[in-house]
Image 1 (cartoon, helix red, strand yellow):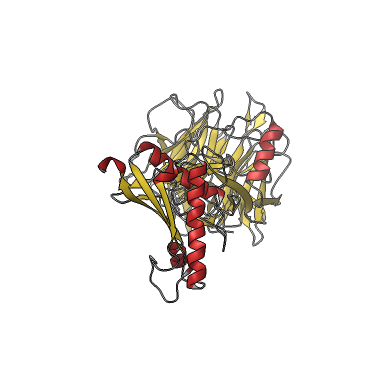
Image 2 (cartoon, rainbow, N blue to C red; image 1 turned 60 degrees about the vertical axis):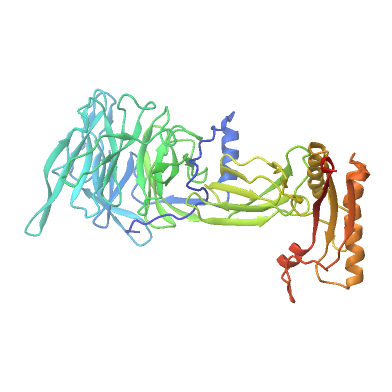
Length: 527
């Protein structure tokens, strides 16, 4: 558990949208827990003690030289523990602890006497080469203000120590800076600050670390991450795709919850709660992954700012099934044979299917996921939408019919479907025939020949009779729905005029050959 890598447990979106859906309005904590139990189903965090916790507070920070650095206000061995007179609590000091093969923590030692102060120490972060440290200290116990510092690792013989300690004034502002984190590539510093002009409370900002060691301006991560409440403890995975943090806002169980936002085209998607098997009704923070199945979390065990460091293991990772129905907009009839593709937020296909005879699709929805869905059906406008595992897409999915194409000699619509070896028209094809009726109403000068064709399976005589019956079924439907008989003719051609000439036809080629064509045989105004 010593090398930081990415947790790859996610799904769904494309580069076209950034999940700007309105947030859910949820009444009551129980409703929130119900939503999160559903949206994170199959993604279970198993928490256990690390062996380092005391009756006071321990909070995890970051890894350094294969050791875990923690904050604790319990007196350790002979190190001095000072007290905040305003809050009447002991101040936090930084300790490094051993990590065994099971992830247990032990043997706390003062991390650095050079970085130790008389006030509260805050979180810290290291550059990828671990030669530079960014750390925070409380400089005003009355207001609780923390400031940001930087130091570099120096050596003298076998001894290593932190030197060149420098306070960093990013915008020369009189505000607090807390919970720093360095991006895995070392090019960005993430911080939390109550700088005026944010969304409220503490917001998370990113700051470019320039090649000469200077810094860019503080850039707020935006409303998909930050809220009117406090947002802290940023943690970016090594591949730069997933951003974890703790927040008192968003869809929240209580106190600080841990959330994740995916980063697509340098934009942060709407944050999703990691769920009630990790988050509690108290404060849960300082989430850090050490591999794709394990990590650490600090949680307030009593609601009095006394934290324990817990280790977690991710188990029972599975997808949940969700059924949607696809219907036509006006009639609300179910639409079979619609092609459905679901992608994750990075454009990867995670599910694809075809709607059944009742217009239903059953798709796998990953826990804690972003989803981008597209639906295509011949004769209908393409449908596109996005949703998350928290804010699931509503069913039915409604498709709008596309307009028919009128060429010089034909009205072109989607294929007319029949049951196998039958001439009765399916309900979805009645919707298609309504397009022919609409064209004839808009063009009273048209007269239409309904020509039906089959595939090459079966005898010539049988196919000829079947196609004639199917042409007649379309004819009868249009007459029944108000089209004048003198404007229509019908005829079956069997297998005599295939679109796909093949000796051993594929199912797609057979489908193309089974068709009804609507030919414009006369324009009455030309007579």
